[in-house]
Image (cartoon, rainbow, N blue to C red):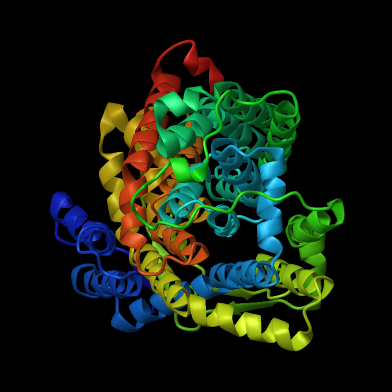
Length: 550
């Protein structure tokens, strides 16, 4: 028997909204204020979600448990698979002594930690977001920054802040392709609108990142380099998104920004060098790296080999034709028994009643984590590690990440349960009731969607239909509000529990997820509010209204 969602189970919208917010409050409050360890906070949030879904929203208990299990399975594959294998690759390079050579090589480009942060967290991170997404950029850049001597808090928090500008386009345009399918709005119009909306923020984020790291005065000592990185990324993103589409926007913008910054640094140096040891956070401290050594070109190429292989394979794995080929070899699309086609979403969340599907895709070969694992194996063999040494390193990585994998599974279980129970839609309808201020609060709805699910794509699935229906009721351009959902979601990526666990695991700062959340929370809210203000201008104030296809 199909169960229909009920978005106001108490008959009092404010009371239903408070109940819907309870699981998220338990999860984030447990991390940030009660200072619970991540697995405990995640399991507490999941337990709260089960109680709210079954007792308050009337979801059958068996259905609720299956929804949580479905989310947990998704958390382990593909997300946990990425985390495990990137830690394997990092451990391998560190144990073989290659990470210190890599650190010295990056110092050869610039020995200023501010510029290293720009190059790795912003440029490299954007490339991995465009090629793979799903936590890959935070895992890679967090591990690299920590290896370069940044503290654990800096490595984790700054990687999360940097991983914003490309998220709206994500892995080969997946968030917007999904959004177009959900809303039936033109994909190229969505791509163009998001590109225009994110232009200012793609320029702003590098400055914001540096200020968060070292303050205003030290940031403006390197403002020419920050401007080069941000402006080149912003311009490339705007042009590609408007002239080509969403597919290569993040990758193309990242490569342009990376190339522009490296070229610029060949001719420009800051008047004063700021090293990691000069910027202390007092938390998650790490010893500053030793004085960089000069290594032979062959040694530098050897140190870069694992990361070059990683970039190449992750990019190749992201090409649709390659994914299709690998899925043709092995892919199982498994309807999740007892959940698939057993839940019905109702208006006003969707225009017409819809039956929810629950198909678990077991695509082990085409998963990004598999590309990362293959990178580690290839690089390890090239670095002289035998098969037994690779297995031992992998087992060590598994032991290191076991608690994190449990946490990710619990958090995704919570996210999927709230989706199938209609709890997320109740929160969305509360935002939709804000009338003339809906462009602002509708943007924050996208932020909320990513904060809960950890994915801009998932947020677009959850709230894309609601954004279209509500904007039509209020006389707003549907393309604008659908785009705002994706752009607002970008800033929620900093605070979603899944990304925070990935960051803590990559920096080996286990159990300190609450500190990372407190570090990034205000940054996330402030940037999301700024996106909301820009959406308000584009909705009502000429000439900004001309930026929106109508």
